[in-house]
Structure formats: C-alpha cells, structure tokens
Image 1 (cartoon, one colour):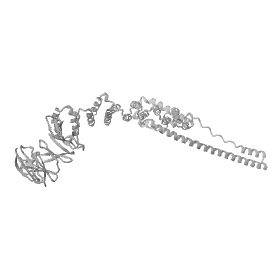
Image 2 (tube, rainbow, N blue to C red):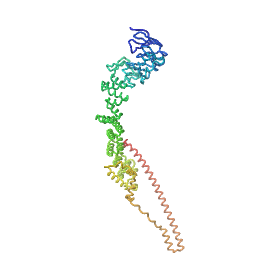
Image 3 (tube, rainbow, N blue to C red):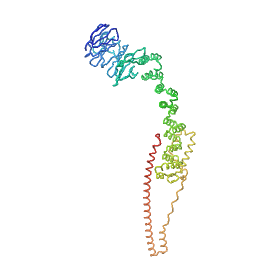
Image 4 (tube, rainbow, N blue to C red):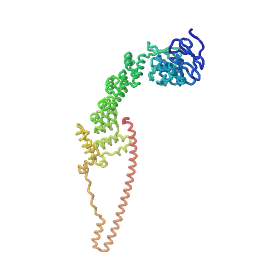
Length: 579
C-alpha cells in the first residue's frame, strides 16, 4: 500500500513512476510524485469538475473548457474552450484527442516549446504557453471509447462502428452490434501490436477482437507525414490482400498515381486509369475481361466509359471499338456520321435492326441513301401510313404497293375510310407530275449507284451543297418541255354560233326589211330570251343539288377519316418503344 486518502477524482501521469493527481474539491487539485505529495493548485476556472490523465494534467472546468497543467512544475499550459467527455493522449505525447458530445478535436502538442517557456518563466497566468497546442483536424463523430496506435486513432462511435482515423480520414473497420435504440454496446480495451488485433468488450463483458495490421497503420501514418521513402519500405511487409485497402487510402489522399501502382482490384484500377487519362491501361484491362463477364451490365458500362474517354482525346479508332463492344448504337451513329464512315453506317444499320433499335436503323439507312430498306422497315413495323408518305417522296414506284397494304390494314377498322385512300393507278388526277416523280426516282437510283463506290469527297461540299436545294420535279419538266409524260391540254373550243340569233337573222333577211317582219323578229327574240332564262334556272338548281350531295359525301368521308386516324393512333403502340 503505497498511498491512500480521500479524493473525488484520481488520474495517472503518462510519465514518471508513481506520479498522479487527485481532485480534492471543486477548487483544489493535488499533485503526487513517486506517491508523495509534491504540490497543490487552485485551477484557473470557476470550478474543477473532473480530471484527465496523460502527458499533461487536464482539468475539466465548469465553464465548458479544459485546462492543461505541467506535471513537474504545476504550471498552467493552455486552456481549450471545449467541453470534453474524455481526453486521449498518444504514446509519444505529441498528439491529443479531445472527445466532445458530437465531435472530437485532434491537436498536436509541442513539448519542447512548453518546457522552454516554463524554464524561462514565460508562462502567462491567463493564456499559458503560446504555441503549445495546434489544431490539426476535427472528427465529426461521437466517440465513446478509443486508443492511439502510433499516429492512428482507433475508436468506437455511438452508432456501433469500429473506425480508425489517420490524418482526419476515417476508415470503417467493422459494424458492431447495437442495442434497441441503435447505441453501441462495445468499448475499446486496447491494441496488441504483436497480434495485429484490437480488443473490445461489450456490456456483458464479452471480449471480441478484430484484425488491424500495424504495418498498414504505420504505412498510412507515413503517407500522412509525407514520408514516402518510409512508406515504400513498409509496403513490402504488407500482404497483397491489403493492397486494395492501401490503394483506396492513397486515392482519398489524392495520390492516384501511387494508388494505381498499388491496387490489385481490376475495377479500382480501371477507374483510376480513366481518372488519370491512361486510356491504354484501361483498354488493356478491358481486353482481359473473362468470357463469362463480357456481356454483363457492368462490363458494358465500362466500355461506355472508355468510349467517352477515348472520344475526348479524339481517338476515334478506340472509340469505335469500345462502342461496338458495348452495343452503343447512338454513339456509333454520332461517330460514323461525323467522320463520314459509309461502310460503318451500313453495318450499324444492320446491327441496329437485328437488335431491335429501329430508330437507329432507320436513320442509318436514310443517311446511306438506302431508301428501299427505310420503306421495308416502316412496313415491317406496321407503320403503313408513314411508309406510304415516305414512298410518295422517295419511292413513287412503290406507292401503289404500300397504299394497297394500307387499305387492307385500314379496312379492318373502316371500309369507307379504306376506300377513301387514293393511289396513282386508280386516281392519276390526284397525283400531279407523278410520271415526272418516277423519272426523278430513277435518276436518284442511278446517281446513287454511280457514286456508291467512291462517294463524294468532302472537299466538294461547297459546290455540292447547292444540289440539296434543287427542285428535281421542275428540273425534269424543264428538260422535257414541261410534258413529263402528261397529255397536252386540249385547245379552247371555238365560240359556238347562237341558233336563236341565226333564226332572227334569217327572218329579217327573208322579210327584206319589211316592218311586219321586224315585229316578228322582235317577238322571236323575246321568246328565245325567255327560253334561255328557263334553261339557266334549271342549270343553277341542278348545281345546287349537286353541291348539297357533295357536302353530304364530304361529311361522311370526314367521319370515316377520323375513325381511321383513331385506329392509326392506336396502332402506334404496337411498333416498339424504340420509335
């Protein structure tokens, strides 16, 4: 029994044998050295509510602050204006963590500066020693228990996680059991370096341990100090199973180049390679993808990322290869149309059609001038109205065929609406210049065949772009004298002689100018005018009746057309979402 006595609080010093302190009352602290009382102080606070041991004596002030005192001299060192729950000192004494209610503060302690100031009597009664503490970082977590391992702090938080902090970066080691309210049940007992394990105890006094390699902690500490020579020496002693953990730590610190060299996880290495712009490394990793994973969603997403990265540096060859590997049809459409890859666009149309990407296939066929396949694609997807109008513009030779298909499909909904559709064969008067359109189609097909092998050079665009504005119908008509195969308009009929006037003239001539003959001629003229008026009235009545009948027919057709439009709109849902 070295010593005994009354005390409210008791704490050990981290240095010296038998050095400790007690709180005798709210305003009296006693220091003991080698179990002998050495001095007593009155804290520079309203009251002393608790003590914290370590390399300095900590006194919890009643004014939400902690005051630190030197063990040997009892001098006041510094006041930190936070309300601590616990104070944790590192073994070397250069670091201290002050755990508060919702956060914790890690400070560095300059023992040499403190000792020099005390020796020279440069201690301020109000402020203590200037430069004795510096704030390094804050941990936004509620720490319930913890332990320093070198410059790394391992702790349990109130949410049931075992974490460790190196340089302010938090790593989670394991999720622990919690009570019904979600609070942790464990406390940190300590760390055994020779076992590479941290030991914890729960409320039922059950002890558990978890592996935390000291070499990993030392490596991370060396990195945080910027001592990469020491870190590289330590790396050789770390098992490769921990390399990915090391790499993620390096990445978090901004050392991505080093992380890329260290990591053994292909996914992590791929992401790092893209971030560092090392496209060749990322491509090499993708080429090594196992066969059973080549069609996975994750692999396709990686190819897309690599394609985007290659496009940013204008590596079109790699962009094309990546897009093909990931079935990125929109990307290929953009690439082929931008660089003028005609063969690639033709292949894209086939691939997109096979994979059901109808929009991409249609645009690809249209850009390559393959209007026949465009029409076939519209027919295959039951887009018959669109196919008919497309053919009217680009393939007039197939208008009859497609309108016939349209009629057959529409007759299932409305026979009247189907009969209202016109085609060039049955109603040539409704298709003006149709023969000319057929000639334009043949001219287009011939020109396509002539230029397919060589294409049109991009340097010819300034002169060739004017062809896009040509009115081919008008051009053909002008070259053929405006006939275009249509019959010439008949000449206007000559003015017909009026038989009534002729009869009047004959009577006048026979009368030889006689007065009675003139009266007779006047009577005949009046009768003729009355007859003409009757004929005109009959004609007007007939036209009015015809107009009324036409209006009735038009109303019926309009109703049928609405029904057909409704049916066509319903059918649009059958063509697939890709349209």
